[in-house]
Length: 460
Image (cartoon, rainbow, N blue to C red):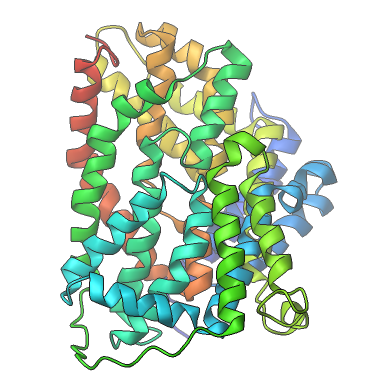
């Protein structure tokens, strides 16, 4: 039997995990770290390849973490009380309701009138529309839950099948459009606010919207708006069906009206979360409950058990638990410290310092996932600032550049949700993420460094 590359990677991860369990404990580590490393490397092998269902990787991680006593149960299972997990659940219910009622088809008719029928124009239009949502919905997973079901219906209307490249490209345009530029707008994404909270709690520094966005959006945000759709077009372009027939829209049904009212209420609560303080996750959960409430919602209650795929919920819970385990065991800080030790920072070498700090952010994000990255990087920032001869604020903001250049979909919940909602091929998603990462490392990050240097960050 011939093994494929994903299977080879999983086998290699399993062998590496066994080595971590059996080898003597190196200096500077403890047995718990070794057991954690064994569990994590196997889980990442499964998640990064798609050789097995992602939720299986999560269940294996949860089981092995408890059996090997890697961390206490509240830490291992912390994903189940995290807002992101319930935001994914709410998004799945919203997507199912929009599809079942036909509201997605009604919205698609308006989109077909708005966008030109070329694949490139569709990609740019959907990407820009996703970016515009960052200004009103303060959660990338929430935005994905709203936009992806509609884009899936749009892809079907354009003749793109469930497993087509064209459909994959449009879904990824919606997903990356609402997430990647959002990394450069302070309140738009979870890692941004994780950085904000960590900086405030550890150093007593308050990041401002203006400073953060001025540093990050002019290069990182605008480059994503210009080049990400172009890369999506190059990888996934197909010719859409040119159907010029105009079907008369059916009258709105009572179910569609109720669903629209629930969605508008959820959107209003998402937009105003700074005033009422209710997390977008609990807004999504409340909307999901309304959608299955008899005489109020759009779905029967048994749909939650009969028609909903809970695999994405298990996957996200496992991902968040992994980040918590990495942080609690000190493994993330240990890895970051070793990376810094291998390529030491030095005053006067500003371009190299920026590259090293960004690389550390990428490595930590690969292990802990992006939402957990600030909790590992921020405590090390003062050490890095002293070594590089930079102000503390420069080191705190430099790793944000690494958020746009991640190679695996498991690193960020919004992409996980999109993959689950649209049942995308992991190989195709990985190819897109890696293509933009390579492009950004060569062109975008050097420009961002020069822009930050001109503003007084990153040396000078």
